[in-house]
Image (cartoon, rainbow, N blue to C red; front, side):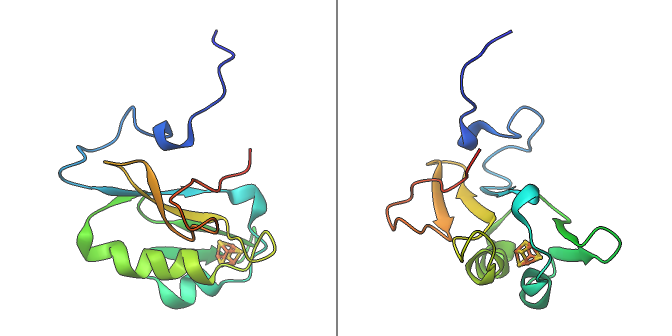
Length: 111
Ligand code: SF4
């Protein structure tokens, strides 16, 4: 068993569709979701489960067509003092497209 820290950009890649087909993915920090439901208001990919009070994405991997509304969901998420718990990642470069609080593509997932 490896004790190496998890590289967030590698997350979920083992059973993932090819990058050429679905160039983007979301990393969702479900444990930081405060159930505000903003994501579901702006993106069809997100639903808020009223039983658990936690949101979930329908798809973790998507293409250009679904990029904009997922970026919007990441941008409006108020969790973690507005840093957000939805992260949209460019799988080819490993960069965070949104919310990207550092402004340099650094993945802002807290483990
Ligand atoms: S906007 Fe963020 S905090 Fe609110 S339900 Fe969606 S993921 Fe959770």
